[in-house]
Amino acid sequence: MAKISTKILSPILFLLIIYTLFFTTPSYSLGQKVGGITQIKDVKNNKEIQELGKYCVEEHNRNLQKKKDSNGLLSFSQVVEAEKQVVSGIKYYLKISATTTSTSKPKMFDAVIVVKSWEKKKELLNFSPSSSPATK
Image (cartoon, rainbow, N blue to C red; front, side, top):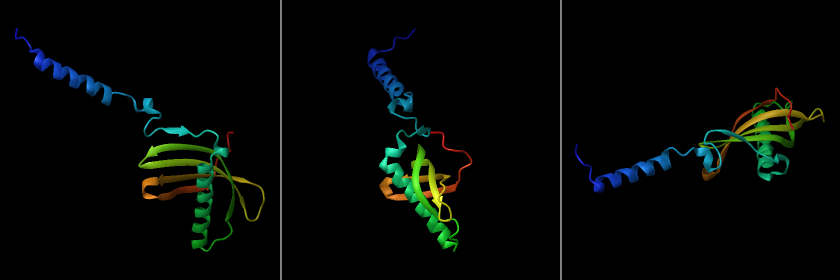
């Protein structure tokens, strides 16, 4: 049986340890799971989330005005729930309370927006009436 030199075994063992540390460590141990959706806490006091919600409503209104439809214009009230997902940027799932111009009764809307801060870019992917009420 051939003896393996300790000069060869030490670098191989070192590389095996490095590989194990870097490539098998779960990403959620670093704070959150990459690609996983996480709940955002204290949404009502989170200025950034409230600003994103307002932006979504404004963008929705701009899209309606481009279609020359002013019937569905909304007035932003507040974001009541929010989740985020790390993608190529951060994708936010927002539940927004807003009122229509014809009634003062708030309605719930679901919005999905992607923010790429390094490009200073926001893109509203979806804005629609919510099929479920707010859970909080």
